[in-house]
Image 1 (cartoon, rainbow, N blue to C red):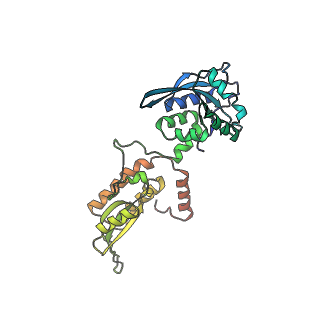
Image 2: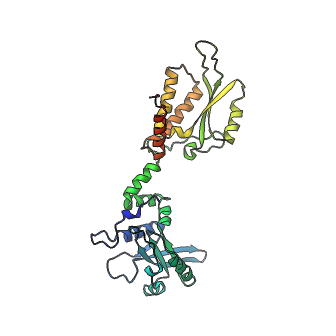
Image 3: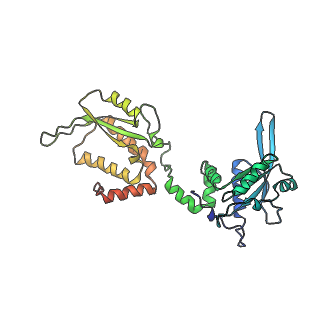
Length: 314
């Protein structure tokens, strides 16, 4: 689980926050398209927390279903919701003149309640949202993401670090496309940048480093093999490649940038205009992806570099 439902205050406190889970359920259902018929309140609720309406559009027109919503916030105890926590479901639906029952839970329904739901589905509309279903839906849409940031601020900050989005630096969306299948390699994170030059002559002093003459972006595997055969028509050429993901991690981005700058300055490396333009395009389009805090995985990679003495490129 990414979202910690214990960030939402307990429902049985008297500090003014006891309605937070019901308010969260209202906002959640609203972004899904339910119409709020009756808001949460603190009066005697007759075993209902709010009433919402769903409009289903079909060939014969629109069917409106009024749902009685029951919220159970047991995340702090970790207790599952039993059938005894949801008594007399059919009577409650009838009393409130609803068409179905919708459970909204911060833990999971117990087996007993699940069996009760299955039996009731033969007689009425039954649906439920548990913590896992709620989280999955929230993290799949911009509206859900905004809701998560409001009700789960601590969890959401951690989520943002581990699931970084490119910074909005340039007017247009940045991308690097495979030159064979046109996949966006910054999005798939499954690509490579390949450079080619003639075999270096190390038998002379000083060694001769021939300029980079060709370069391409490619998916790994099939696309790379096809592009390699296209570009490497001269058997005296050799290829070098680097993983695209190295350009969208903050530390390895700096590492690659410094390596190329040092190679051009100190090592006498050269590249023709086509190769140099593709290298610049890669650095520029990758930059929004590294203008952020590092993920845990990327921090572990830096730790590996430090432990193995691979930080001398700075």
